[in-house]
Amino acid sequence: MDKRFLVIVLVVAVAIVAGSTLLPRRAEVADAHAINVGAPSDTGGLVAVELARTSTVRGRAIEAYPLKDCCATKTEYALSVDLLDAAIMCPDAAARLVARDDRYVVVGPLVYNSDVIVSRGGAVTSVALSQRRAYQEDAARAAFGEGAMLRPMLSSAIAYALERAEVDAAVMDVLDARAIDRPKTSIAEANGDITTYELVVTRELMADPAYAEFLAMVSRTADDLNDVEHLKAAVEARTGVPLSTEEVKAWKQAGVRFVAPQG
Image 1: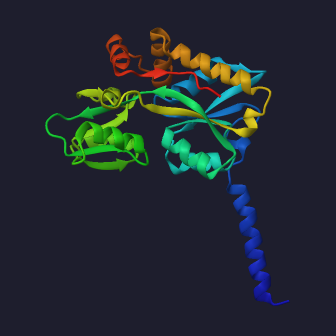
Image 2 (image 1 turned 135 degrees about the vertical axis):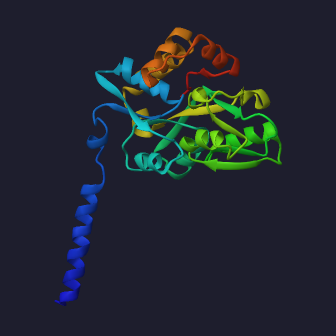
Image 3 (image 1 turned 180 degrees about the horizontal axis):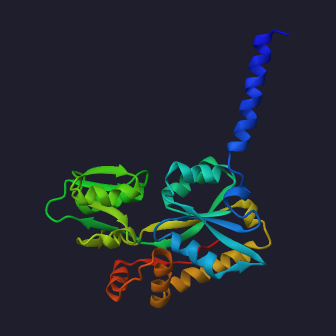
C-alpha cells in the first residue's frame, strides 16, 4: 500500500479521535440527568436561575446553563450539539433556531418589554443595539426615525460604546442598564408590548412525562417574578445587588413583565 496513503489515513484517524475528545460532552458541561435550561445573562435569565434555585421535576434538578448572549455563536453551538433541553432566547434567535433545526419548538413568550432605550441626551444620530436582533432595530427606528445610524454589536459592548460617546443612544436590557445613570425609556412606549424573550424546548423534552410539570414550574416562576419582593430577591441572588424601590417602580412603569408560555 502506498505509504503516502497510509500517512493520510493515520492523520485523518488522529484528527477524528482528537475532534471527538475536544467536543464537550453533555455530562461535561451540564448535568445529563437534569433538565438543562440555557440562561442568558440578563433579565431573561432570571427565569432559568430561579427555576434552578427553587424547583425540581420528578426528582430531576433544573440546571441553568449560562449563555452570555442568545444571539452569539456559543449559544448556537450549545443548542446544535444537544447540550440543552430548553433555552430562553430573544424572538429573533428563537426563530433562527427552529428554522434550521426541527428538533426545537418555540413554546411562547416568556418576558415582555425588558429592553430600554438609554440616551446620552441631545440629538440622536447613532444607536447601539445587540447584533442580529431585528426587534431592537424596529424599536430604534420607531424611537429615532429612519435617519439614525444603527450600530449592531455584542451585547456586552453596548454600555461601553454609550459611555465612550461612540453612540448617542442604545437599546439594551434593563438589567444591563442599571449601572448607567442616564435617561431611560421603555421600548414599549413607541411600539406597544414587545416580546423580548421566549421559551424554546426540544421535541424530546416535550415528549417526556416530566414536560407538563416542567412547564407548570416555568409558569409559576414567571408569575412569582412579577411580585415585587420576589423580583428584588431574584435580582439580588443573580447579581449581588438588590433592586431598589425606585428601580422596581421604573421596571413596572416600563412594562417589564414575565408571562406563562403556552404550549
